Every structure is written in structure tokens, then in C-alpha cells.
Image (cartoon, rainbow, N blue to C red; front, side, top):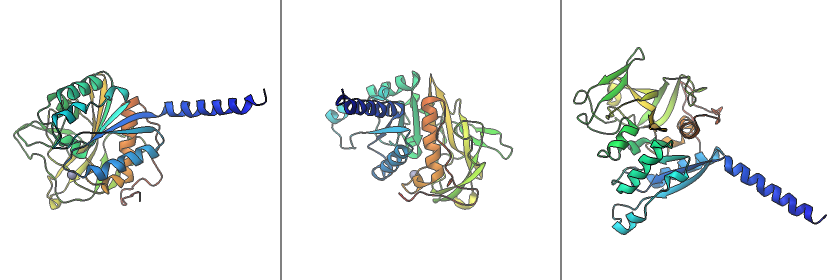
Length: 293
Ligand code: ZN
């Protein structure tokens, strides 16, 4: 009997570890092609998401542009095994079964997070464009959404106004537009994001967009003099798609504000709730804040 006790304790400890692991949300990062340095940014995404303790992170890497048909046949991310998918992908169209798999997964209640150039991908994939609302497209592609000085949403129709672009990278201020949304609760009304591209003139179907944060695109930074959407989400079927156009470089992703919003956004998209805290070193209206690793 006495000898059984350590074995029992070990079993209990194992169970405890399992129970803890079960609480983690399974998050899948998809990468493999991007006009950005995904080999540098995926490890940053993976590290800060894992560091929250909330996510068990896996990565699915597609074939590169020289990928053979056989290699693409093997690229079949099992979206349905995950609580949330994060796209760090901007490249060739995915095979039809992968596209269908993602549509089924999100439509059936899945969750996706889109980071920066992931919204440049797939201009011809209609359902994907509904999921992201706005993408890096020319002004003839679809509508544009901005916020005016009174906080009202402004729709600029297809064909009018600027298409997608950005000026030189710089630190810029992010303005919270929906402070009651779970992801944004406790986040300052305004805070300084670290060096990044400030996307403007994004285009798309722009349906059901819930804008959570914007940034002012200044003329002297070759911008549009408009408040451009930086963070938004869209319901798609029973699922949720959460987008931020922040995150150009690994250094941009080391911004505590970026990491907080992506972590909380992923948790919320997956569960409808946010438990991850806003850290004490969150950027302020005057000061950026970056992690060193
Ligand atoms: Zn970029």
C-alpha cells in the first residue's frame, strides 16, 4: 500500500498537468509564404502567445513558391482541431480543399486572427474577403471604411479615394474606438504603437465590420489625413474573424500593445471571453513599450 502512494501521487500530478493543458486554447499559425519575413515574425508570434500561458501553439507551413503539386497535396491544415487559427500567410492561393476547409471551420463557429500582410492575400477568394472585410487592394476592388473627426463611420465607395498603401514606417498613436468590447476593456483610449507601417485605403466588401481601433494617417507621413481602421472583427457564419493590420516587422510585433491585442483578440475570437490581462508595461499615450525578446 505504502508503495502505491508515490505512484498515485504521480498519477494525480499527471492528471493535473493534463487538466491544465486542456484549458489551453489550441492555436494554429499558418505561414510559409509572405512578402514579409515570416521566418522572423512567426517565432515572435509563437513566443508571446505561448508566454501568456493561454495557448498551445502549433505552426502549419505551406510549400514555398517552388512547391510541387505533390507538396501542395500534403498541405492540409486540420483547422477543425484548433480553437483559433492565426494567419501569417500572404502568398499563392491555397488549394480548393484548404479554402473549403477554412470556410467550413469559420462558418461552423471557428475563429481566425489576421495579422498585417495576411490581409493582402487571396484577392480572388470571395469568402476570405468577406471574412477580412478590408484587404490590401486597389480602389477599384471595393469599399473603404474610415472614421471621421466625430467618430462616425465613413464609407468611401469603390472607385473613389485612395487604394491600399502606407507611408514610411514610424511609431504612431492607436485610438481605441470601442472601449466596451472585451478585447479593449482596460486598454487606454490612446496609446503609442512601436515602429510599423500605417496601412491606409484598405478595400473590400467591408460588411459587418466592428471597428475596435484606428490610427490617424498623417499627410506628412505620406498618409491620407483620415482615421484608418487598425483593429476590427467580423462575424462569419457562427465564427469570428479578428484582424489587425499592425505587425509589419518582428520589431513591430515586439510592441506590448500589439502583443496584448493579438493575444486577447485570439482568446476572444475563440471563446467570446477575455481573461488575459492588460500588462502594467502597456504603452501610454506618450510612450511606446516593447519587449526585448
Ligand atoms: Zn508590411
